[in-house]
Structure formats: C-alpha cells, structure tokens
Image 1 (cartoon, rainbow, N blue to C red):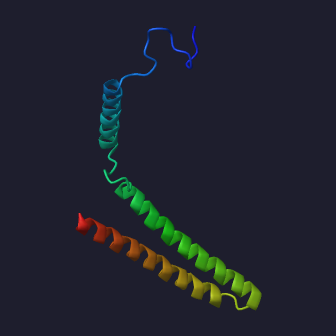
Image 2: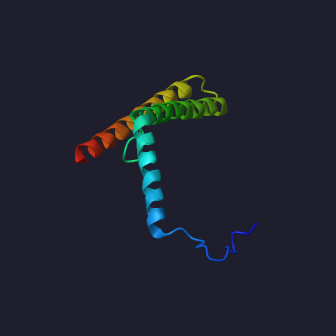
Image 3: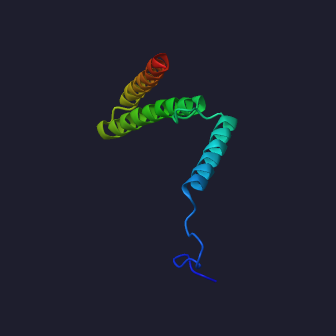
Length: 113
C-alpha cells in the first residue's frame, strides 16, 4: 500500500480540473436543494423564525435587566418597590425600542430588494 505522498508509478496523483469542477458543482447543487427544502433564506440571514426569536429575546433581556437594576437599587437605597417599578418600566420601554428598531431595519432591507 502506498502513502498519499508517494503516488504509484504511472498514475496521476491529483484529479484533473474538470473532475474537480464537476464534483464541486454536484456538491453545490445538493447544498442548494437542501437549503430550499429546509426553507432557509438565500441571503444567509436566517428565516423569519430566527428574526422573531431575536426580537423576543431582546425584549425579555431588556425587561430583565431593568428589573434587576431596579431591584438592586431598591435594596441599596431602601426604597422598595418604587425603583423596581420604575426600572421595570424603563426595561419595558427599552425592549419595545429594540423590537421596533429591528422591525424597521428588516422593513428597510426588504424594500431594497
């Protein structure tokens, strides 16, 4: 048995360019068919479900961060529950702002296409 570095005498160790191009095109066709079957976008940005998950998670994180900051300030300043309520509302506002920014960005990108 010969190693990959030493080809057998009389045999070409590398496939010719046409064979490589044919294999590349075949793989590319299979990948495109798989992407179409799975419903993925052609632009590589992910589907609508991915965008919706991002919007939802950004909203939840903003509310949680606002609540945590308010809770910690209430503990530190002994103003329970006023700063918690205030920062919960700030978190809600920040989350809505993030969602609206993402939605308007998606809308602008869709209009360009």
